[in-house]
Image (cartoon, rainbow, N blue to C red; front, side, top):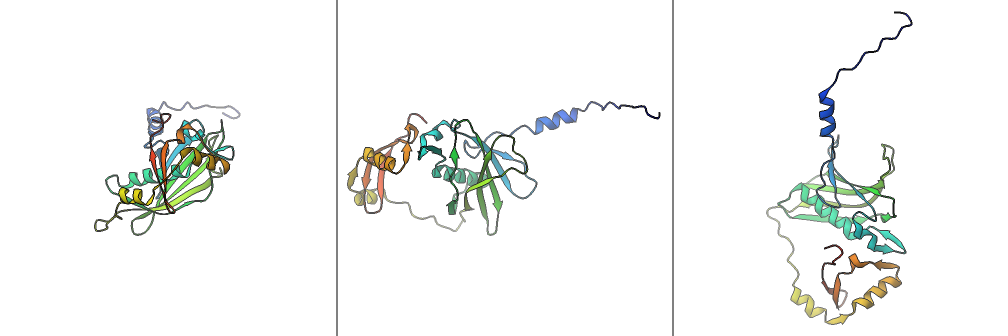
Length: 220
């Protein structure tokens, strides 16, 4: 057999097809949190692709001429992540920090990854990262954008009393104009498109304000 080659045909394996099927992406549990990923260590991972077109309303949040992921979107991700830990229990969020803005550019989708790391006393650290979605690898640079500590409400722990709407209305008696508020934001370089123009009326008090908000038709 010297200098002759012998090729062995691999046997057909139905298990390979089954494995490929098992690795199909899981369904998203939330539009911003995304779908769960398998992890080899003791963390919980979620991943979602976002862009100026997905969800489309993100293109309406513009700062100094550039679409930027809104801070409220990070809070929504934290709440959705907390809901996956214990759906039937109220959750408390502490030490919420936005460390880095998340700019969005047309035609350049990003992968948004949320990491839940269990800690002590029932607390979970939630961190939100992003990276360009083109061919991510192990060595891909991930940017940390936001983080917080989340824990479930204890059985003997009372939540803070809900604010009284009547009391707030009593303190916020001066009615402002929504158009004037939008002009002030524009002067600061903050532009809200139709998806972020749900504010219909505005009342102003001492270091607080009250608004009447209606869900915009563009995101209804």
